[in-house]
Every structure is written in C-alpha cells, then in structure tokens.
Amino acid sequence: MNWITRILDFISPRLCVVCGERLAPTERSLCSVCLFHLPRTDFHQKPLDNTMAQLFWKLSPVEKAAALFYYQPHAQMAQMVYRLKYDNRPDIGEDMGRVMASEMQLSDFFRDIDVLLPVPLSRKRLRQRGYNQSEMLAIGVSDITHLPIVTKALQRKEFHQSQTKLNRWQRQENVADTFELMDDSQLKGRHVLLIDDVCTTGATLIACANALKDVEGIRISVLTLGFTKD
Image (cartoon, rainbow, N blue to C red; front, side, top):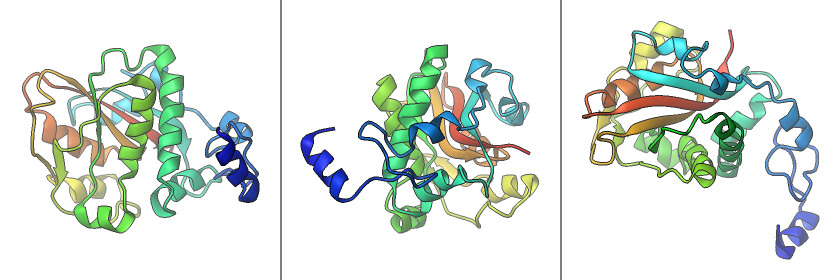
C-alpha cells in the first residue's frame, strides 16, 4: 500500500465487509479474523467427487467443482456476497478471487485449467449493476494464476426471474437455454473454468456448461465463491 493510499485510509478508514471493523493496511475487503473464520468447503482437495461436484453428475459435462466457503443467505458471512452484488463493490470480487486462487493453487486445482470464463449477466442486469460480479472474481483469480479470461464466448440471451426464491427444479427451468455460444475460437481443445459467485442447485452453471458442451475438444470445470449448504 503506497503513502497516498495510507493517507486516504487514515481519513476514510476501510472497513471489513463482514464485521465492520477497521481493516489493517495489508488487509483487503475482509479482516484477518473474518477470513480465518470463513467456513471453508475444502472442495478443491477432492474436486472430482464432493457435494458440489455431485450436483452436475449426469446433468452436464462438468469434470471438477470447488467453492471457497459454505454460503448461508442470512448469515453474517453472506454480507460479503450481498455487497459484492448489490452495493457497488466490485473490489470485493477481485479480492476474494485472489483469496480463492491463493488457497486452491496449493492443491494444483488450476494445474490443467487453460482459460477462465465468468458466467455472463444479461445486458439489462449488467447496465443496472455496472459490472459482472463473476468477472470480478475471475480477475482476482487471474491475478494469481495468470490464466486468461474469456468474456465474449458466451452470452446470456435474456434474464428471467430471480433464482432466489425458486426450488431446484424451478431454477433449472428458469435458466434452461438462456445461454448462447457466440464464439468458440478461444475454447476449442481447452479446459475451461466457469466462475460464478454462488452455487445453490447448480442450475445456472449446468445451463452454461450445456451451452458449451459441443465445442470441439472442450473440458469444463466450475469454481464459485460460495456454495449453499442444505
């Protein structure tokens, strides 16, 4: 952190997005205490067969799956995701993307990944929010792994209703066929890592994977910041 940033931080202190305590100069978005207590899934240790990976079995060609932490909608830690999506805080995505990549690369989770593909937003939602939270996560992951990010290959054709209050089968129906492959030139023969903010039933990621599955030689895996635990 340079001296200008330190002065600004003194004038207007940065606060932890979870507990609200003042951040130390070396801390980003989360304080070290909240980061330590983040309920990690450790799915990256067994990415081919874990609770999240099992959501995709027989429904999409996803190879491995991982999420950083267990997400509970009304828990204190959920503030991190809420503020990333609705409070104009794209920096949270970049910061947590770096955290995910730093922790997961120790297990070689990214070893055979070729490109990062953030789940796209609809044009309307992108205009409303000003950024794609999944792309912010991908930027943070790329900062650590140096993997390229592909953003033009997949397009969300339209936005249906919010997934929040739908059950598993309603979610799958809500997003089915909403993603359209636009350009596969950067995906052929590549292992693509789909990145999203939260995985609940896997419906959105399944829809994305199914839109990509016919690309020649493609392999698909998924990574999310949170995973909703039953």
